[in-house]
Image (tube, rainbow, N blue to C red; front, top):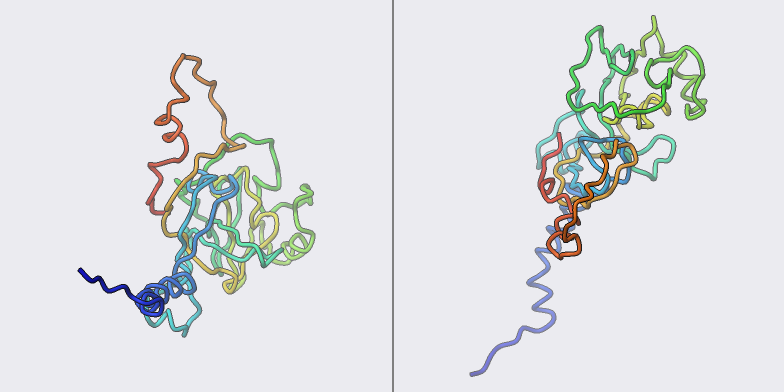
Amino acid sequence: MWHYLPSLSEAFASLLPLVVVALFLHTFVLQPFLIPSESMERTLLVGDFLLVNKQVFAPAGTMTQRMLPYRDVVRGDVVVFHYPEDPQRFLVKRVVGVPGDHLRIEDGRVTVNGVSLDEPYAAFEPAAPNPFRDNFPGKVYTDPNIDPAWWKQLQSLTRDGELVIPQSEYFVLGDNRNHSKDSRFWGLVSRQAIVARPLVIYFSLTRPSSTDVQEAADDRLGHDRELSTRLAAFARWKRIFHVVH
């Protein structure tokens, strides 16, 4: 029986729509990222692979904003943004202060406009005391990790012991509050620098965390060399397709 074999050009033509859709999604809507540090534990773990929605915070009037749902940044959002000190790098943190907010941190707890925030996502893993980190805005330059330019700007934005957040600026923190370099140390994030919102964890490699309190290993004899055991330990299977909040 004679079988028709498509030519190379026909095969390419049949794949072209799929390629176009994939490029559109990657360019305008979805993009993958890998979490490299502990600063967002327990929301995001070292080794998590994320798909982020690049369209939800798209600038007004863009093509994708007319085609897909859009909203502005609100307090509590986890966001991806250009790092102010190195715009080529992307960081992920949580927005805790929006334009016009009066914000302070006392003993690690955030208060905004006189109300203590309910933050079930925040983790306070053991760390050495740090007066500037735990009580913000600080009155004394006490930490070498503080950006000098931010320290100078902070003085002009502080009123009655609170940071007053300017228009089009956002204050962000890592959920792992004692192990995150964030707005406390390098300053505010402009609205223009916020580019995406984490959507879902599509894979998660098992990676150790340097900030966790490790439990003693179980010394019972077993069969750790068995393939099934090694596969089970290779990834955090229960985190796959976990929606980020």
